[in-house]
Length: 439
Image (cartoon, rainbow, N blue to C red; front, side, top):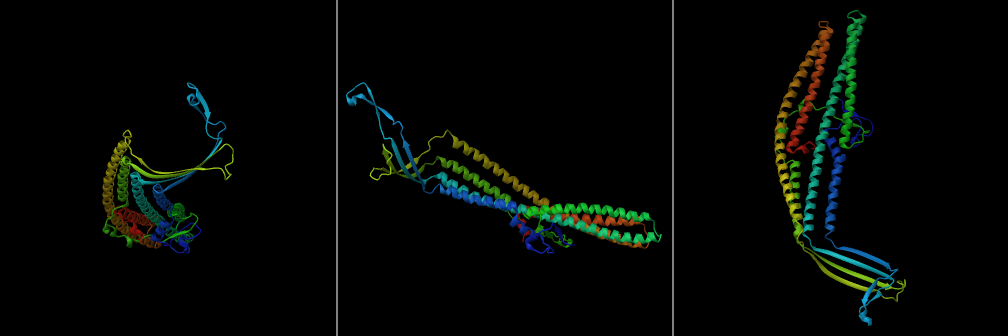
């Protein structure tokens, strides 16, 4: 059976147009180029910068500030008249200068902040969570790509069946033409062959369109441009149908690991809320320069600039917040309980999925064997009927019926092979062993 060739352009991994790729090669390309995986990688990279952002708040903070003031009307203060011998009166006096310029440099350093410490723990756990989410995205991509790969090959196998039957009808049509010319059969038999061929040709065109569409979907999954060429190896044969997946040891699936990490993050978030009850201690310092002038002569070196230098410690102690943190903690406890239930439900769903997948795989394997035998029997019947027809022992109706039965047996066989491979994927997914397909 020839490889599946989809659309023109450049080949996968720069292989020649005649080079057919197996599932592992397609999966490796998809893991390297899938847009969904690249998005998950970007999310993981984003968490690295979020961790650095949180850490930066615990590093020294330095800022500079400058200000220029022009008092068109200087501020006025009222002084008691007693200071100039006018008791019972108030004397308006203007203080300050027309122009003021000041510059300040401020520095601070957190010495203790429990919320910052808790935030760093959450950020580290978030990094691990996004790493697991990336793994899940990769596993989902492996599953979807594998299913699409098998569907492409199933359609190609059906197309090959139709091509084989069309060739047979063409040969039969040539034979009937000679018999009609020799008045051995009526033209009706020849027309019936032509009608049958036209129907098969229509089915082939529809199947070819579906194959192209499925191929484009596979390209989309693996991140390949639609205009590029993708050539796949022939459809899996019955010799590859076995039950080795039943012997795979189960591993903890990534869905459970994600839930475990979410449970940890929720616990750490609750601790971060409780950290709001702790005091915060910080060191700070400030250096300021100020100049006051009645004339705009700040650039004259003989005029004074006044300095102010200070440092100190800042301690903030939370006392009462109206119960805000208490209620947040209660909400977090409920969220943790909800995650516990989700985890339990996920475990039970995985146990169910694994048991169902095992049974489905066994049933599919048996169905493959049955359809394999049916296909062989249908071929024997068709070959015998064809010989009898050439010997004019049987009629055209029996021949067409046997041809249709053989074609349907082949189609059912390839469908069961697809069902078997999908069942195997389902079992590997439930076992947490999808990555074994890549290797």
